Length: 422
Image (tube, rainbow, N blue to C red; front, side):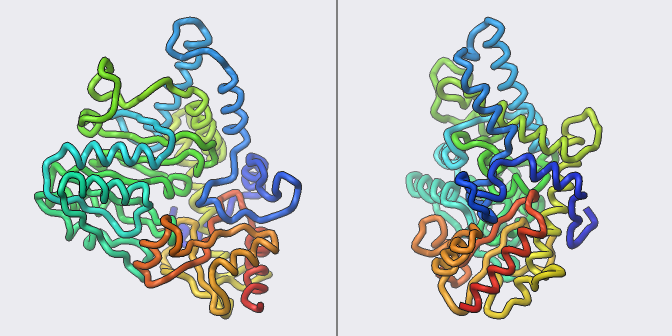
């Protein structure tokens, strides 16, 4: 991981990666396009989508004892093992819900409504799925909501800033791992360490939805209580949100069937197809790593390292340019939000503004030229709070994935120059 500006995948690995996804470079009707809007929901891994359909067609219930039911149960068991491996955790409880937003609401409500304290701490950059439950359940319980401001230079929230809001009466610290507006990576290890020095038994939850597809996470030595992610933003299908909960969070009062164990978080029948789909995502990352290791965590780590370095190299190319096109840093009329020069502290997300037009108009101009980006504007409930923390009304967000290449980057940069010339 010593490559400060990244390292591109080999030609063979890049070909493997590009062939692994549906609709990477064209719409369903065959129209060519560059899809740089993966923070809104990534391109789909073929193996994940195909496996989901195949398994979902099986009518059997995994709660029975005949062979097909037992096979379905084995897929759930493997999926749960892969979720623990992905976060590098042991014990605790794996929980699923209809979405990552829903499972975050459930975790936060369980803590804030049941753990003593007078305040809840979170950050201004949180997605509404984690900010809103912190706000809602703080109000319901009469607790103070303390909100850490953003750092305009890094695009994130500093560890000292958010931990300065924590005291012995804080019941929950809720923080995202990476911003889905700027790509800034929060220093979660430092935040956890500093917060626990203030209150050792503090409950801590982490929103990892944005960060999971771009990083190797390791909570083995981090004493957190809950972390979530969304498979549909990690090359998978929609319809499920995933979380890991510590034993003590899982035992807090929550919605469950009365006869189920205290720490059980499932409601209704499990969906084996979702677990099988998720395992195919892990298989893909392990195969891309090419380590040959029989240990799944080792193989997964090797694959994620290649993804991280490829995405860092793409980020550097977008910012600094290629042999064919100048980068965003060198295109007149473009401003980059929180352009932290340390690329090791950024996921592959870039937010920009144009001198000559508003973000919505600029996004429409990209789309006319078959480049898909997204306008984050303050009329959206998903953007207002974060944008205003930087004094902005809107940005154009660019979010490629590791399976993109320099041709995609050159197309994007060429179109960007065209937009600035309008």
